[in-house]
Length: 150
Figure 1: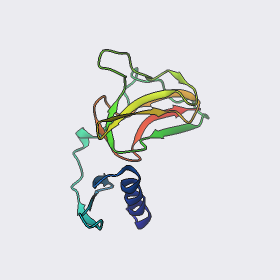
Figure 2: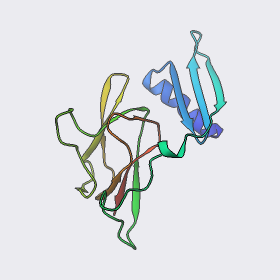
Figure 3: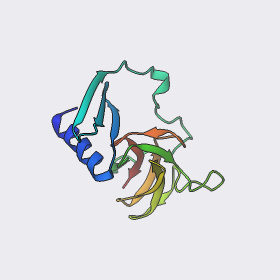
Figure 4: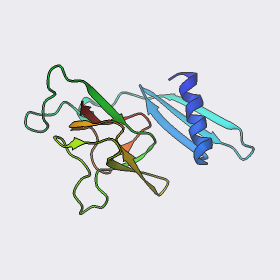
């Protein structure tokens, strides 16, 4: 994690009125906390790598369509820290699933942050190859949510 990324985190805090933000990335955990005087306190910790079983692995055959050779793939990443929801309500069908074709501007998921439900819209047109996050999982800023074949 570099200085530019930390500055982006501070900007994110200021833009959204957050008093505390914690992000874990590449074995580092960074916690930024705004004090009563407005100064930001930074805590950086090394984090032990998670067990391989907890990391999402490649999809098993039959779970998701394979990427067509020669086709470009694009990741849809989380624009914020929050909780990922694949459907508008627990009993509703998911916004998208592997194999679906999506359009620019189409809602692909919801990320809940600070009790606000934020619709995440696709910025690309293509076919959903995989959904990288499970329903109700916490997500980090910049974490891959979907893999799209264009």
